[in-house]
Image (cartoon, rainbow, N blue to C red; front, side, top):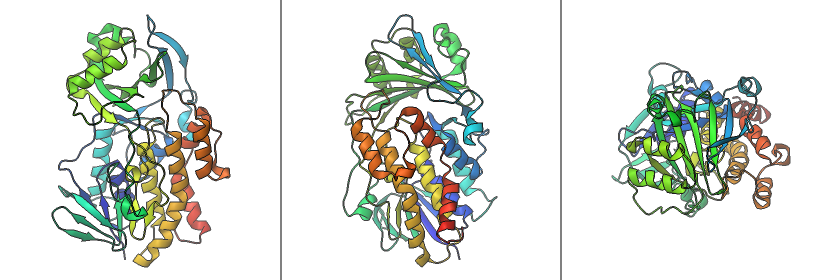
Length: 428
């Protein structure tokens, strides 16, 4: 008999969990606060550890507009003219990423991936019962023992298992650890904007920034290590996606207009030379988005009784290595494996214990590895000690940027979970 599962949140993590559990033949209900839910209008990084999960769940990367990432080029942005500085930091030579890791690395527009996951979850085709998604439902409290959620409308929904995938502001963790531990807002934020590649033709100087490198990422930096500009192609090079990463205080109480965000980008990159300011001015006003950054000390528990925490609701992290969405997908995919062939609620506890043993060390390490207060990727001695405190010695990578990337990308969470189930004598 299948389990009844409630997932709170129809974001990328929640939908990935829904598909994984549907494929394990459980019945899934998603409660989503928004109506006509979508995702922010910029790209996310789909590194090999995420790409193989998406493929495994049936997502056609080609149809999502997946754009390969073949390398990264560095430029000095505060010298005139903007000057190439280095090529291919960290990344294997072009054409070898999939050969090395078994899956590609690239970028997917968040809205495109969200739509693909949504359609796959509710499709009448494929394994399992289609996921039911109910929008316009705001969950205000979680009961880990009862396996229930209460809504602001006074409704109570109960299931065999509840998964909180409702983002960084989720309060579900309080029902797991016994108190609220709000995510912290460090002195960091990112300013996102996009430009259609065809529109760059009206700005020849800007075209030089992407000419000849549609599948390569660009990083513009200067003497001031508190800011940096990243560019990547998206939707098969139809869109150029930009991110200004800011390691300074940004007023998180203010409601910013799009034009104010543009001006903030110009201010942050005030020492950068043309064509970078021209590029920022050329981008459509409605494409500017200010994303606040948040993180939290890893929780001592990732689940309790019949309540599981997933993605940002559990382990919010800074965007330094582009692993926020990937980590949520890993949570979801492993959950799908450990809950295979579970037919009675009393079987859930032992399976979630396996899930936590697999997810807590790695996700906690990612939280620490993502932390920084400048654009430099060095891992401070304090953070090195924190990583060593959460990862078993046999899983600990060399704490250099190339080795950290290799450790993140090479992980095959489904294979690891299946092996763990075999070792436990569980039928997965």
